[in-house]
Every structure is written in C-alpha cells, then in structure tokens.
Length: 177
Ligand SMILES: Cc1cc2nc3c(=O)[nH]c(=O)nc-3n(C[C@H](O)[C@H](O)[C@H](O)COP(=O)(O)O)c2cc1C
Image (cartoon, rainbow, N blue to C red; front, side, top):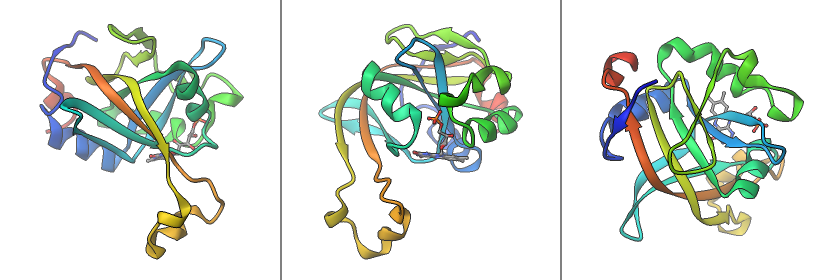
C-alpha cells in the first residue's frame, strides 16, 4: 500500500479506536527469518527522551516476544475493519505453529528504516527500533492488577523509537472514520 510520512501523533484517535476494537498488528521477523505478527491491545504512542516512542506490552509466552528480543525492532500496523477476522486469527494463533499471516490472507512489505515486516493491507504503520526494555515487576504491581498475571506471564515492555510513521492518503476512510 502506498503511504506517506506522517507525524506519529497524526490520526491518534483513529489508531486508539482500532486498538480498542480489533487490536493493532505487532510484526517482527522470527529468528529464522519468517514474518510474523500478533494482535496487540496494550500499546502507547507518545514521547520519551525527547523522541517519538511507541511502547508495547508483550507477554513472554508470545513467540513475538522472542522475535522482538532477537531482532531489536518491530512494526506496529493499524488495521481497518475489513481485517477484523485477520486480527482475531493473529491474536489467537501462534507463529510458532505455522504461517498465520498467510492463513489470515495478509501479505508483507519491507519496512523502510528497520529489519521488520510491514503488513501491506494496513493503512498506517509505525517502524520502531527497540531503545529500552524492561519487565512488569510483580512486587511493584497494585493489588487490583494482580488478576492479570495469575499464570505468572508478566509482560515484557519494549520501548520503540519511532523511526518512521506512514499513512495511506485515505487512511481515515479505510479505518472507518
Ligand atoms: C484483541 C487482542 C489483543 C491482544 N493484545 C495483546 C497484548 O497487548 N499483549 C500480548 O502479549 N498479547 C496480546 N494478545 C494475545 C496475542 O495476540 C496472542 O497470544 C497471539 O496468538 C500471540 O502470537 P505469537 O505467539 O505468534 O506471538 C491479544 C489478543 C487479542 C485477540
């Protein structure tokens, strides 16, 4: 899909709507060079260290966690309502078990600034390089949040410096505004 450079804050309400309805697609190459993506509901776009930053929370049980740790970069792709089914599939199957992108009917383009796949069907993409990583610290969690971690699968938190943010000309229409 043809996209042009945007500010990382442009289309922010649309991106948050997509995130809270169907989820975003967090993509990275696997250690053996395959493209993979998982559905992402916990993501923040903003600024830290005087730079545009995208923060993603990924449980270590996800294959994507291992992929980002190895690759050191990722893309966050914003899908329209036409990709509802694809987002559900990417959020319920693991790339460990096969090529779910193909199964979901998704295709991949090369990113412009990082070695990570871009989902061709998505109108908006953020290309990110990991500049910091930490984990949820169990003793620091408020009691009301403990219920999210009954299985001990505490999120890893990746801070990605946004090296490029790009959107299709008709991104707002494609995302259903
Ligand atoms: C709507 C939705 C949002 C999700 N958000 C997250 C998230 O923010 N972090 C996370 O670790 N898993 C999240 N998941 C679960 C992963 O997408 C799911 O476990 C996926 O199958 C992992 O794929 P992988 O093993 O190929 O990485 C979400 C799933 C759905 C359906």
